[in-house]
Length: 292
Image 1 (cartoon, rainbow, N blue to C red):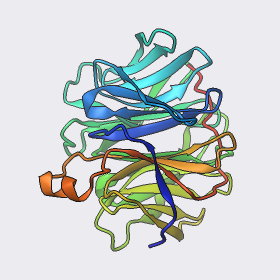
Image 2: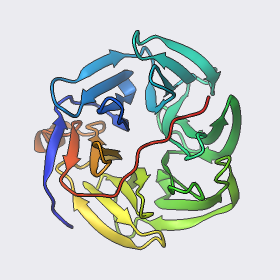
Image 3: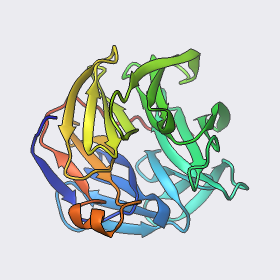
């Protein structure tokens, strides 16, 4: 395992920190404490984090424009007014299913959103991955237990996702103009001899997929052909998702969680649940804006 400098980007502790999204227009990182229904906002220039109570579980954010964000929550996709924090339901997703919530999501280069659901208790096969674009919603993959690792190549021609319970990251060709999958998903990478799970991922300009490995305390990098390139040690055992941050998108921020740790494990990982910055230059890219 490779060791690089890791600093604390935010001391705000999340039970289940997830869904980091960087907005370059205000140099701010947003992420969620899913199970506690909170959106955290942190300027990269420093200062204290701002915590927004959402009133329901939420897990992912996409930028619509300078005034609005799209929030994936347990009842569906909500438009958030940045100035007031008001949420308005835009597109219901499993809104009447109280057993499920939103999970991983990512915007395709064309502006489409892949967004997922899962059981609140990770019930087997309770989740799905959906495609949302300009008001239209379709189910892409169903019967998924823990959907994660949704990511796209910069040209929009390749999509990635996983059911963390399987230990396999899948890859499928993708229509660059619509974000819809083409053909059947194929295995891209497996966890090898690891004991943890693939969690969130991002893909850089070189086609390298950066994945947070829940339960293994590391961030792994895979080449476009699925070869493991790097394995970066993290100071916590449950990193959850990376995001490209900075004015040049050349650093990785990584969220984490303390969910599921007992008192002894939490004492051994006092930084669990914080958000970190890796001192590791990357050729990242900014998230596209979502087209609602």
